[in-house]
Image 1 (cartoon, rainbow over the protein chains, first blue to last red):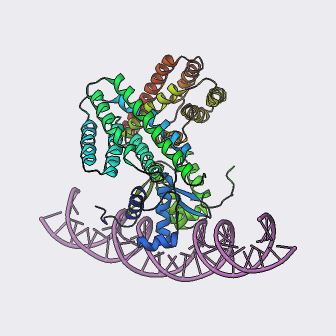
Image 2 (image 1 turned 180 degrees about the vertical axis):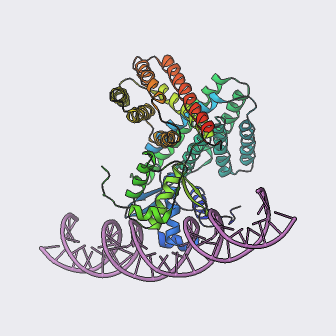
Image 3 (image 1 turned 90 degrees about the vertical axis):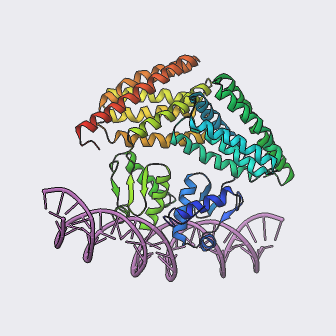
Length: 221
Length: 221
DNA sequence: CGCATCAGGATTGTTGAACAATCTAGACTC
DNA sequence: GAGTCTAGATTGTTCAACAATCCTGATGCG
């Protein structure tokens, strides 16, 4: 999957991104230049270039003179992300045209999520759910908007990495996603928007709740 | 204004960004590592790190093994940017709450634009216009959404850098901006949305028209 | 004349070493 | 126990070098 085509310049950032969204490195963790460069088989300078790319995407945080850390979105970040989602995804639904290719992608994500649920693969459900929403944003036919939304969704992955990523955080949304898609396909934008709001509110609450439980379980800060 | 605090790591990208949005380097121009590093008083490696940051923001384009170029948004990019603007700015207007601090910023931009027009400073009018719209997006209270919008607006600067940046590309919008702000302050969201659409359509057409004239004037491609 | 081929030079990609600047951790003092 | 200080580790930054790639112009052919 991740082959060496252009090598290094493109491979290292890709590889790093994979490590981040797969949870191979934990949110908040410090990434040592020396150690990581050795681990990736590259030099410090090349790795630092990749750091800049990922930092600009919001996946890494650069503290001058202190090092780079895996982003660890907190409650404020979640609120921010959902404010963004409300704006972007509402816009996408309103822009939806019948027969748009992204609608097929969304349908496939719903099917894929159901299949993953059947296999008890909650991580797969989460992945399909994210793919579903990214496909939804593609309804707006704006690569720039999609790019912005995609990196925001990658940040969400880092949020999930901090909380217990259990089933009930994903299971309820399979049905909501399916219903929302049906409303869009039916051309019923009002219903679709209402269902989108319902999804976003419920999802946001669930994540914030998980954060609250984490705070009270482990040390406060 | 641009002093050396954290030096280098933050100064070089800032300085580069200034060069880009000020038009000191032309859209499409190739940036030689050796020459630019010397000009900025830094090393190739440090400059390359800055390149990565700016490339992630969309201001520079990185062609592997060929070099980095100043982004030169074309017609497709303009269409894309305006699709994004429609989604984001509509969302911001809908989210606007009475008394929001950004409303004062918007008012100041309108005043600033009128003043610049009085002085015949069209570049100043353009700057105030952009600041106005960025303030509008701040109505949504989402730093991430604002960051996305801000870098998109920076790209617009590069678009203007390619066309004749004459008065009529900016003058008409001072009034439209003022009217739109009044509608928001009045709490009349429907009128505000209508005026926003009017602004976006007119502005988009004007830019695309300028592009068309440029194409027919200079060589096609 | 147009076009393919092919050096040669220039530029980017990438690394390793080195040193300055800064931070971090642990020892020490009071 | 709190504050201070030193030593070590890490980041910031540069340089020099070489491999890989691209670009330019010259050459030769049809």
